[in-house]
Image (cartoon, rainbow, N blue to C red; front, side, top):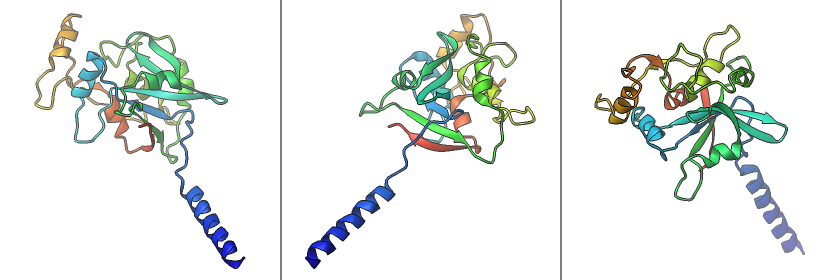
Length: 215
């Protein structure tokens, strides 16, 4: 009888240890950022190649989480539709997948010591606006990381994230043929060095913490 009791207590302790040690499940909150790796198109591949760095992640897209009760949405800017709102499932399904079929998406959240305005509310003001196909900071259109940049404002109205000189070149400094053809088709010069943002650069912000990797 004593042996059975000791055995039961042992298994109970092991079970409680397993429960307590289980990683906390990620729960999306409004304003979280979802960074996506999507190399399924020439456009996405060109973004990844022109933002290569020493880190393991090179993202081609980023969206802003919005919640409504138990429903989770993502506000994003995409070439085909401009600024729009999609379900989390739609966003994840559009991602490139790991060998096991998992979406290559990473969830981040602004650190708690950063006080900001409501980014979801700010993003809603841009719904229906066109995609910024020329990557200009001064028009009423938005590419994905530009949408994030312009909707994340601190309480003084200043931008939370920084701009950097844009690059449309490979790691050797040579303009990628995709971008040469892309801007030539619009009779525009490549805005190399102009201020802008990209998903990988925002992901590297010291104000963000990584919460979850979907794969």
